[in-house]
Image: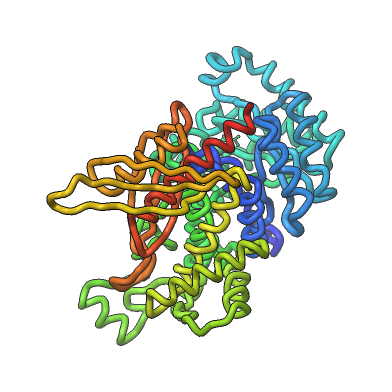
Length: 514
Ligand code: KIV
Ligand code: ZN
């Protein structure tokens, strides 16, 4: 017989670990804390904050999150190696009882043979020994059988039983390469429930990648078969094609409660805000037709649909925008709004700016309100994000001080740029294919850092001809890739600022590595 407790699904968010492994989506410590705070508002059960042994930066971020974030459990990832486990234990320790060490080891034949060069007995031994070792530091230990979906089911059952005996409270069954299909993955979870005698002593998590676009479907199949933990990321961010999207699995469980009869603790009204925040901080644009949080998710274009919606919403709408936190009352402030109203709105949107950033953001808001009749939430989000971006490299960052472009049908596009770096002011000029190219080339000349523009997209932040344009770009600097975003009513200025954000990020990351 099922109990109420068994029907509760635990949400393990790995946006800050697996999500951050998405090429170009790197986050600094402050941004990670900002996202972690939003995950608290979402009420996730576990935040996987990073992989402490991976770099000093990762270690510091996990530790800072363990120190500051209250509520969810804070997990750090570690390979089944003592040095990884020790480093991870040190990073999650400030979370006290809420700290978790998450160890992983590949179990599939292909990983055993080619990557680890170990046989089954050695894998079993190493997995159990590492869980035991991690338990010396922490009550809450999770074990992940990497590439579980391509592992022989009987061996996976053996490993699962052994790590539970060794003290793992959670066993994660990942579909690491997104190879599984739903019937098969659900059956694998069912098999484990039938063949692992001590399985009732642990929570079974699943961690599905989206290489075949099946991450959410596989996760739902696993839940139907008895799994009670979901590892997922905001906007489905993650390695390659990403992970199971948190917002999708949550809304599927909620909308189809009739099928699953499962609940989570997630505050769904925070989903949209979480999606926006992660998209802005990582620079990873959410596609317009993305389920749940895409700009078109609740837009009804066809006349026949609009007619139906006006008569009765449920004709074409299976969820309400309010359920995910789109309240429809987005017009918020105008040029007569005071600093207090502006700062209050920012706090409600989940931003915590430093005093000087708030002053600067407010000045920008007033400037914008002078140019633009209506200032929307999205305008304010764009300003707040720009402020945080400006903080990235602290006082050593380049800032755009002056930009002039001349362009036209019979003019060679030329840009004059003046940058400020601490007390230094440097200016230069260059020609280009167009005004954006000219501005970016001038920035290259001034900074001496040459970037290759890989992706460039521009989107209106809100409706209206006077809307701010938000530029998102991905830039390669040698082997390193970074993303940047910036918004302005002047799209050349937005492009130059977004590019400068990328330059600042790469300079900061090189300085940290040096
Ligand atoms: O995809 C995967 O297998 C992982 C593990 C480390 C959990 O991310
Ligand atoms: Zn993964």
